[in-house]
Image 1 (tube, rainbow, N blue to C red):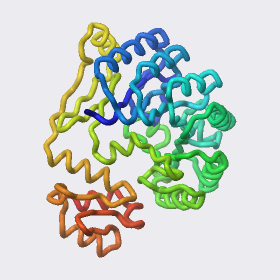
Image 2: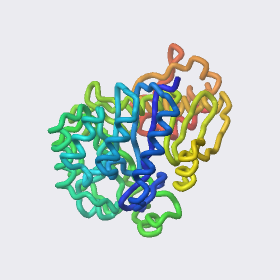
Image 3: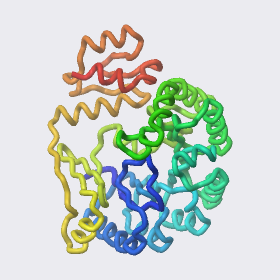
Image 4: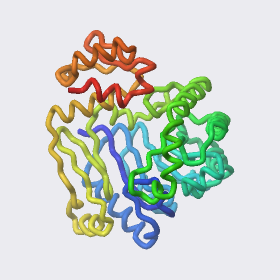
Amino acid sequence: MTRHLYVHVPFCAHRCGYCDFVTVTGHEDVRARYVDALVAEVQRAEAAPETIFVGGGTPSILADRDLARLLAALPAAAEVTVECNPETVTPAKARVLVEGGVTRVSLGAQSFRPHLLDVLERRARPEQIRSAVRILREVGIESLNLDLIFGVPGQSGADLRADLAAVAALAPDHVSAYELEAKPGTRFTHRHGRELGRQAEAMEAYYEEVVATLRGAGYRWYETANFCRPGHECRHNLGYWLGHDYLGIGVGAVSTVGLERRRNRPGLRGYLEAVEAGMRPPVDVELLTPDERGTERLMLGLRLDVPLELNGLAVLVDDEACERMAAAGMLVREDGSLALTERGRFLANDVVASVLR
């Protein structure tokens, strides 16, 4: 039985230049049909998950009645997260979320600086982010995450400090702070390529400031890019990082169960036609080897701030490389476990890559 369910809603009002998720703009005429298809998939799956994550895209762009139908079709779960864009959050939408059993909302703030929001092609203004937080708090959302992006073209150290101060003032339960990743060849890299290079040089200092500031505000740095107040870890994402099986529903969604990884193909029309005909969505299947699954487990588990129990994973670790990294103060290996040190966590990708066979 899979412990985690992901439901993908691809619709967006606008596709941001740096985004590489499976999204579509417009298509208001098929959104209700798409929800029908998701409901059919959920019912067919007969899942009983511990956590559910409704992501996108922009799930909160759905009409209130369609979002309510989708939430009503989901199985009960201890944690139910829905991603929202601030400009879509109204008192009515917030009531739909609470009445639909949502316990956690992830709000795509990204920045509170108007000129950076413009660069990121985000529609919400700082006052709309603050309003969305207030509305969600008033209806009783149990746990609230704010997404923040740093390393944005044109961002200064003062801009980052202002963003962090704005986050702290809103006191969310969880903060996801990501380095901007612009994929090569996108319109974003063509438009901002030179400035992205300059930002890359400042990224290490920005990252250190993010960690120090959020820790100083009482947040636990529990994963490379994630910070929480006590008891507000994202249990769904912890499932990914701990190597649990998960089921993905919707266009472009991914499932990993045992050694089988299934990726629903990204075509919206093909997805709808298949599900409406009572068939499985078009899918690509990848069979993983035990070593591939184990390597993923190591790479993701070492992102956390707790030691990773190696158990059967020790054969995938280069002992000599571990000794070198330990001597350099980057990691600690003891009692069958492996953990990055404080210094190692700032260079996690490089350190982890160096110790894998």
